[in-house]
Length: 380
Image 1: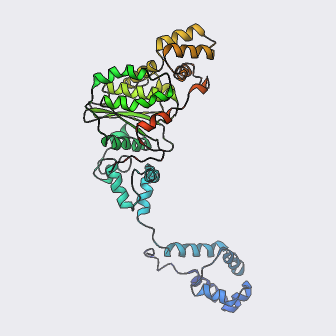
Image 2: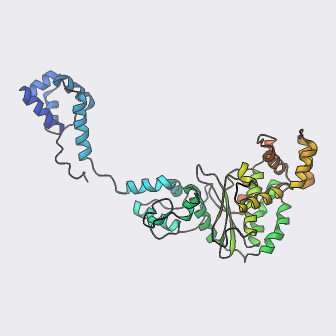
């Protein structure tokens, strides 16, 4: 449908005719001046053809007028008479400006549809009652931000979190047992000597009543993991963003500690962890106490802190690869786990980096997975 209130904006041919009349020129006169067929002039004057940039320049020379005058007349006419865009353009732009909606469609999280239905799907995805209540979209109707906005959870991480939630809701596990989870730490520790042993993690956690989900991160996201509660049982979600053995076990143990400490359960809040490296993987006083507790447990799990500290003091400043491998063997760890903790302590992330082997290939086959070409079977 053409734009409204455009009738008063006349075709440039109307103003061209006025210039001709002022000079007493006929169509054939202007055609002679321009050096073009008279029919070309007639098509412009009758409104059947627009003024091209080249013609605007020629008319400028012919009438001694700035050629942009004719170009702007044509532009104004074209804009006024152009069809109005699909109303959904603004809605889709608003959604895409906050969330990677196109990527979410490609990943099978929501379906491609018209703007109204996309809004409805996002309502269901984020478990709210109206478009205004979708976090980061428009909270004016409620007069306040959502708790995710207050905590400054990036929208892209929030979308990942809710996908983990959807997948977790579709899972069936035995009743959660905290004591079983504590006891199973020993079982998990026995898997640390070889990357392929990580394949047992999903089964071990499920036996304790823990819902373990792996969801591929969205582009530009730096999410590592999350722990939250559903029906009195913990959910552990991971992205395996950094496909390295030290990161996998650190993040996993970090989230397990959140579950054991019941972090977030009382307030029904998610413990969201992104970029678990550097200071964010430390016990710095700048971090929330829950994160310090989880980081300490994860670091000690990867490489017992006291033994690693004693080793580094004894060998300082020369940490030879053969000595690190020997320590890993004594600790019953893969060398990558010891190297990862040493890199952190030394702030040298190039140190023996070849030992940080990939592990995702061993974990995915036995896990509930969404991503890497696989769409988890859930519905909104």
